[in-house]
Image 1 (spheres, helix red, strand yellow):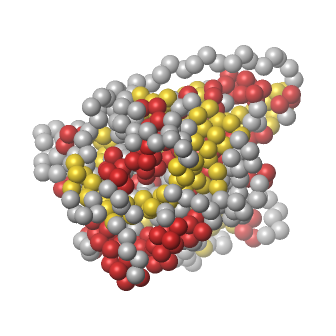
Image 2 (cartoon, rainbow, N blue to C red):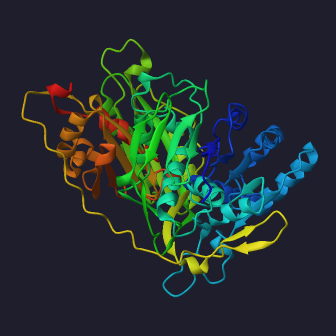
Image 3 (cartoon, rainbow, N blue to C red):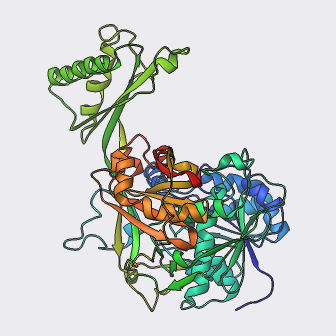
Length: 574
């Protein structure tokens, strides 16, 4: 392993559509060795899949190319290597486009890419008896680890383009190349994976989307970077003078994001989140150490997207008095229209959001929203049948009738599914700057990541007077999606708050506080080092974000809803 100075790895994108000038800001704001960019998510793969249907030469994130028109020269001038998953479904195509751009702007760079994640290119995979998941699939991609990235960097690549790798692999692959870690160096690899997980969502680590946002100026948070040491420990920080903040709270929030327990399994290593220690190491500096690693699981996760059918929606605005009666009237009228047409959509869902209040000074505050969502395999069943019926009610329904937008024809919706595949069937390859292909072997040692037993809880707080107050007075939260499941990470703001939270916020209480979860399986994980609980709510999001089965399809606001709920909290904590 290399010793000496830490490896400084930054991030300039947390999703396809993130702040365009972040790449320039990171390249000019301070010293870096590697700059990563994460452009992929479950929904992004569906979007790129539809792009590829229109033009087989596409399928990658074009934003990255536009950023490189200026950024490539900056990176070369500062000696910063670029690693990105913007290749999406066509990493070879994006690598070629980067070479063409380099020639055009006069910046000679060595470009490499990683391939093999596209399972639709694997003969027979998913078509074996009992495993026919390929039928109707638009995209099918394995989540690769950092081995291909490491091989490209060791071969001297200045720019490495990948397709679907794990988000953390952009960082762990670069660290693996720099420090010469072997596949069995599980502890340092796990530390780098944790650093990568903190960086992957960009400004979420520097105060963006943070429960206690009022404590910092987060109008324009900077992007994060990690100073990674040879043992896998790191310091999370940001460039001087950029906005936001890096605190143990902002880093804890991101560590809990879209994870589901103490074992965070990936293709290279399983990182033990319950062993991570966070320490404030100065202003805007948080040290993460103590992370232990275990062998990765014996299978690779793969993400499949398909067109699930067609959907349409209409939002009726109900103003003033008798909101419930108005909602009942329009529902009855739409039901009658479906019956008259003889084409009731396969799924009809109504939700009434009581955003209205009595005696309001502003009309919008006197209005409630009645949302109709319909789905069907047949586009005609959600098209004119729905939009025409809604339009025809304009002068013949409840008083004050109007809708938030003109009714439209139906649109396709997507479905995401996660499956397990044998790594031996995935041809993970690094395509080096000279064009040669190097196979990346699957792990020699694997381990099924069984759930760890919950650790002992801290001693409970002594009994004392309580007061009804929102949970958010003593706890932060961050939530997100994993396919159809939702994740909610909740952390206490103090040791005493943790003593109370650990004993109080059970899975049953969470179901009570969030009635939408009452009939769903909820699993609670305890992470004492982070003073945190992590909950997985199975099936809340239906078939995933692209299916838009819920008002908040990615569960982004679920944690803040939980924090707003009132319960009896010890006065000593308030």
